[in-house]
Amino acid sequence: MNVPVPKRFVRQPHKFQFPGGLLLYLLPLPLALGAMLSLVAGDLYGVIVNAGGYLLYATAATWIGRAGDLARQARLRVSKPRPRYRIRAAWLVAVTTALLSWLGAGYPLWLMPAFGLAALGGMYLYYGFDPKTAQETAGADDRETAAALEEAETILERIDSANRKIQNREFNRRIERILAVARDILDEIARDPADLRRARKFLKIYLEGARKVTEGYASTHRYADSTGLEENFRQLLETIESVFRRQHKKLLENDLFDLDVQIEVLQTRMRQEGFEPLEKKESTNE
Amino acid sequence: MRLPHTLKKILGWLMLFTTIGVVSCQSMYHARLDNAPKFPLTKW
Image 1 (cartoon, rainbow over the protein chains, first blue to last red):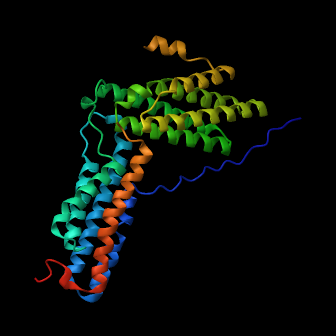
Image 2 (cartoon, one colour):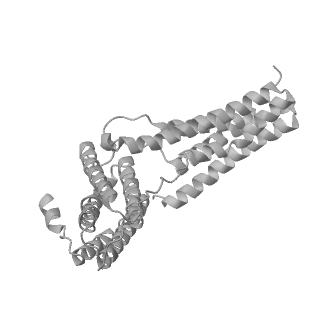
């Protein structure tokens, strides 16, 4: 008789995440060293310039970190005005770099603006500026974004709670990865509500599909110990994860040209696995 | 035209690395040499 063997369930600890403004802590490290050397040499001016410069960069780094946290926490209240940390940090870095080029590095005064502008440009390209408010982006309604994100967040919570019922470490990890990518996608939408229009299908079909699959497996796998079921579930999770990753990449690159093809692929897969197709619901909703 | 995300990141990183890196290293260099007169506001 085939007796199912209970598997030991150990939840993986969360992965360490680098702080948001890590680069701004690391790049000016020579300043910290310079401050110490100045201190040893008894040069008060050097201490003030170097330590002050490092502190200002560190402040900008903290702001960048806060901007990231805010994007995560504020997903559900997109309409509220938020402090524009990224722009503040960019200007702080620009001014600090400009001043240091003259006061610390000893470059001629006329080079100050060049350093400042280059640093500002670097901050814009690397970290980006704060998202525009929804009113500024054509067509996207603030409340609409907030409602869509809230709905998506509820689905993610349901997937997460279904994941807790699944006693298989491999699946748990896969689902956690899927959830992480999904949250990145939501962050991206919250950052730029114009993405909502292009990600609507993702929110309605992909996420709902992932929830159905996960909840379905969570409720049946304890009663049906079948390797076939596991294999199907594994393949579905693989498909979902790769589609989610591609969706995130496309959102970042603002290119959703072949998204419909991916949606078709996922729907066909789900239909093959016996999950109800979602097009009908989709068409009644719109 | 919008730059691809990765290209933006690389360009931004290079610009930050060049500006902040150069300025910080030069400041440290001056501190290391203890050549205070090179600092423009040092005579106070």
